[in-house]
Image 1 (cartoon, rainbow, N blue to C red):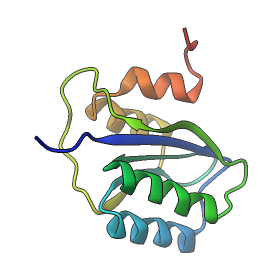
Image 2 (tube, rainbow, N blue to C red; image 1 turned 120 degrees about the horizontal axis):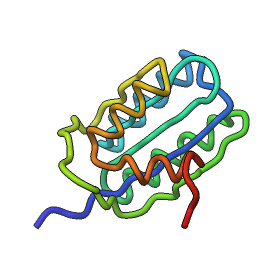
Image 3 (spheres, rainbow, N blue to C red; image 1 turned 60 degrees about the vertical axis):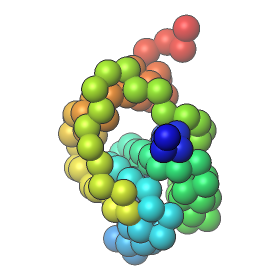
Image 4 (cartoon, rainbow, N blue to C red; image 1 turned 45 degrees about the vertical axis):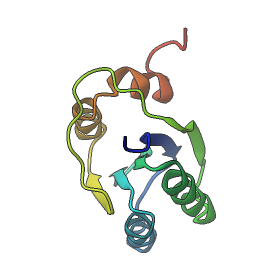
Length: 125
């Protein structure tokens, strides 16, 4: 049986530095995780999934980059899909330019309600 998949969600003020994005891509490759980045203006959103150690190490890399208003809104924990999951390529980071596109990718990953709670779009009953 494969090890459980873990995930984490990070919110920042913005993600605009290409140099930092390059470091995030390298970290995704080094730790063999899938990362999704909302690049451009406000807000900056980052999602990561993979092994527990990979996700924790990738989150530590993000923290070291000292993003403005860094918030680990969903700490690394076991991924609990709500429905069918889309396939992802581990060891890579993907970028989208809008929150709408980010949400669409999250929906494909089967964690729509989890993401909406983490972002504060719905109450945390």
